[in-house]
Image (cartoon, rainbow, N blue to C red; front, top):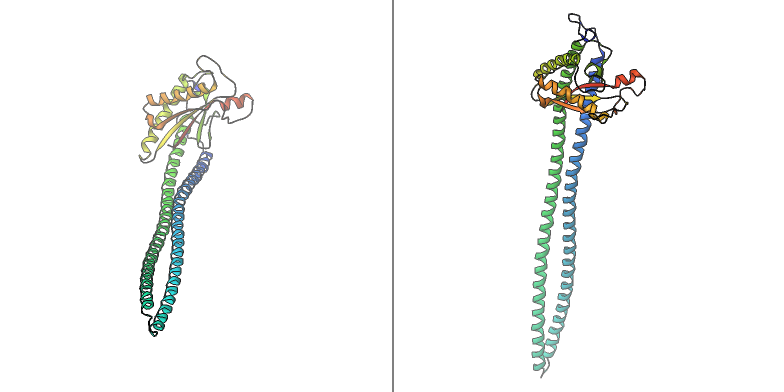
Length: 336
């Protein structure tokens, strides 16, 4: 390793409170983003549940309206039959009066017999009408029972809906608390990881912490236009891999984490047979770092390689210093 890149051992690192502050702010941002995501998911599931309940409620209301309409028709038919019965009874009373009148007259036997037949017929009609009225009464009672059952079902559905909403709210609170705890735990290990990287690489001007990412200039690992690790980069990356293994052994197994390695280039285009664009160069550099770490014993399931080309600059300027700052490799310890 070149003397300019060699870490000076035995020297205590200077106090640097900025990483801790940035870690705290990034952790808070992660928690807020996560809580917002959980809130949106909870609202989505609640809206789906309320929508299904509203549909069931509308169906029950439609059935009730139909039964009420049928009940009104039955009542109307009953009223009509009662009017018919009243008319028949009036006719029967008139026939009885006529019978008595004719019975008092001599020689009215034949007419009385005819009136008796008519009276018998009227009685039969009256009995049929009464039977229809009784049937209608039974149908009305059945409809009322159905209405009562539907109202009970509606009340039960509304009660279950309220209970479900309460359970969802409770589960959401518990999930938020559990996940927030995991995020805080991971943030603690991220801070420790950054501290170890600082110890390994020293306080160099070409190394910085941006948000929740540890940013290293590409020239430390790669020559210009190349995705092959140079000897100095190999030495530095070997120590970084050791730090990743140590931190990974300390992180509890129930925390799902990955170390994301991001490759970035400046805005100057590249067009070679090996790298048709900056996408290819940035991705190849990230993959080269991941491959080396795997060979050093870092678990592959905890590594992610990503290439961003020139599209995520840290400095939007066009000066040589700005271009150099944008050519970088970033390490981000995050949740999977």
